[in-house]
Length: 415
Image (cartoon, rainbow, N blue to C red; front, side, top):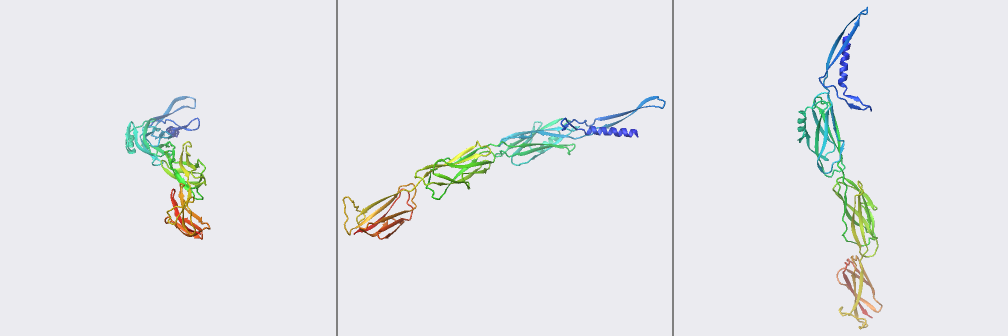
């Protein structure tokens, strides 16, 4: 019975030694400890000494038992926790070390996972200075590579980063698995966050020479283009302003007031409507409408777009001449005289000397009491003429373009 207990104790001690691959460090954290190598023979001997009833001592007797250490797998995968390559960029490399933490020679197989698609593209894998185009090809090579206890192998992953992925993170996970015990795995997660660049451009930059009338309740709209020239999505603060006294900003991109914000994807543009009014200022007054865009990601990145504006107005000049009944012979008040009962013609001309059309023109001519109204006509279509006694009204029902002249004839008889 004593022999049975000794053999049981010996087996328990051997199993404890085999299983002790991890111990607690000074800070209470688990740390790796090299396990007893596979195949090690552990011998345990028990020695018994004894005497008889008279105190005679006899020679000792002993018994031994052997146990052989079996295989325990262990894998540790290590590598960079995070990297920040450019976007776009090519031939970037992740380096992983895979250590055999078991107690015997093993082989390794690897698998990968990429959490966010389209950020990176793996080009090839490198092991022992040989490039492999696929994981399957790499694993064939790894299956033939014996990794002794405590030894490491290195696997490199070469990858490209797509354009316009600045700030978009993806996790690349490499998992190593023991060939001899595929329940033993370990992995390393590397967060790949392409470095983001910031840039913005607002166009146009003037040169429009906008010609606008005072609004009088009618608002105008100008469209700017804001371009996100960075490599990642960004938000932009937009502020509309003006440099002179003619313009008042009404809204920016549909938001009342002078400011708003928008999100714009990488390397794309957005049209921004700025609604504004023009004050009742003098013709020829100039002003500039300005839209400023500032990157929220990097507020040192800002740009302005401008639209230059000149206030215009129609300016009507009127001229009046008098002719004999033939409508050809002018009557000079200094040298010529008219007679009672004579028929004469007045020519009333209107000229638009402004930079803008006159939408409506109305002439009121009140003939003096010494005259009797006979008739009136316009130079061409577009006039609506009426009279009440000697009071003549002529309305031009079409616009009078800048620089254009129109006229009416009014016939009267001298009393």
